[in-house]
Length: 151
Length: 334
Image (cartoon, rainbow over all chains, first blue to last red; front, side):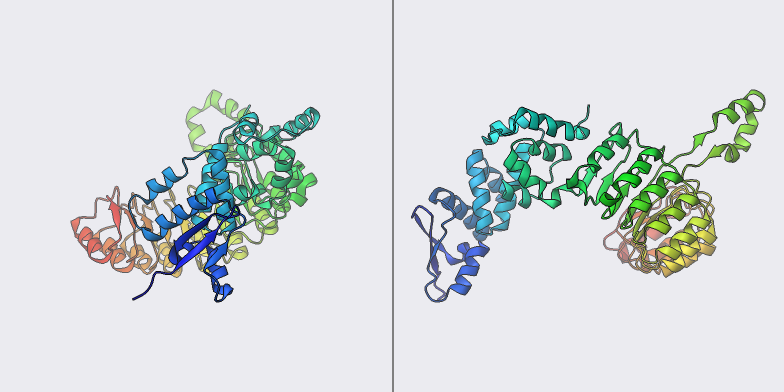
């Protein structure tokens, strides 16, 4: 008798995804929008997130809503974050905006683990961050923080 | 990047967080303004720890540091703590947790300085602050009377941390909840009296091997610190049932280590059995205990999870039966 209500989520680039309401509610942001949205809450815009990322987010939510106690949840999560660093960052951002704690923790931790033990240069390379310090500034910073290194 | 860092609550080692500071200036600006990243300074096992600590505290981002770990660090001495007090007091106003475990060169003077600078301290740990030789006196005596060395040992050793250090702690830090003084053999009943009078809300106390302490000292703590949850009396063999019986006053007690309590009898255990919340009880080498005492514990401490009866010949399978009957959670070892 209970009809499984569906919600449509629309990404920043206009892609639409129809999902079960229960899955959509895994995002507390969407939950809030639905609860405060009133009658026309069947299509929800998620302008902070592109279609590619949104589809991955939905995949995560589906698994966690539909089979929260399954034994393979852990391995699902482990495999889920075996993606390249750029995708991981998008996932982290998306889960932050959509308020999906589990995914935020998972993606953030994976990224944080990628920092571990790396030198400054390696971090820049992995995350494609430009070094905009002057040599003097960088030297000053290194000196200022040399106390933390095992010599 | 900011999102990632704040949400993962960066449980990255100190070294990695600081590496991130050097990656780029936007990242640097972002990280420096995230207060949660700069609440801990960890120098465990590092050399030149005193100099390192001073260098770190001179950086503005550490001016709200909450925890300083110097466990097993080398090169940390009273003189460093004195400098910190005179130059960086402002940075330690929020310090809540100070770990000076195994910092063997810290004495009462160092404690005076660091506690003066850290009024908000809640957890203070200085275990294994061992004594040091007075070499001149030793070599003199050694020439003549080797045996006497043993007899006179208490007089020729000096303790770095004594009741004086504890008096500085109680005068300067009014909010201590956890106090770990394992191995600080210089402290006496006087310290416990001061502790009991200053910290009625104390939750954890470790006085392992503080052999100068007698029934009287411990009684002060038991009577005044009724909220105590963790009490470690490991390797303290001079207490008697007189004080053990008072342990029933500690209704919140969850952890009790009585390893080596050779005078503890079943009488004492009957009282301890009234501490209903005990989860961990160590009775290793409590050689006067028999089945009767352990059965009383089984009946009284129904939340028991860990129990050690190692080295007690007077207990038999009888008490095991009682334990399995009354304490469903116990994993015990004999």
